[in-house]
Image 1 (cartoon, one colour):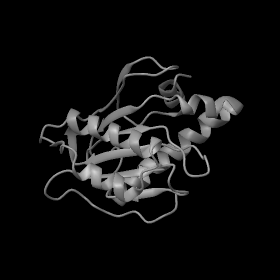
Image 2: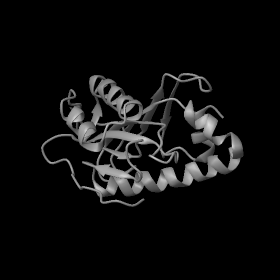
Image 3: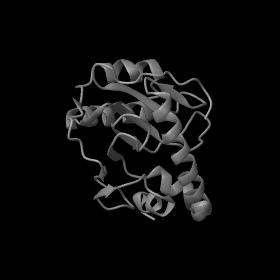
Length: 188
């Protein structure tokens, strides 16, 4: 990962931002999310993506292009210091390198309206070449997710409506998905 991450630990409520690649830029973007989340999330993604790319070989790009959007609610400590509500979707950078676009809210664990808006914004960033400033402006206008209650679930929840290669699914995990689990999330 390169580029500068803007830190933003939740102090008075959820902190929103995004991380990953979009077609309007040639490198990683890190906006609004804490360095702790970015480092843990990027480390996990780099590992599982490399393993799945190696396993799929030449079929990787085709699988990636039709991968489903996955929504998640991660507990504190699983990926940084704060609970995180968000989603990731398949994306590419300006030169076509595959990497997810993740849109998230740290300090939140519920917020269907936020996730719906985040998915719409993410799809617009990918389809209409939105720049990072446009993405962040739209996220600021999105419905804010609910702050995490004191009795937040200690397990991570993942869910997807599926796609051409992957059926709709819901997962409850104690850790981030391993490479085999990530491959199944893509439909392999």
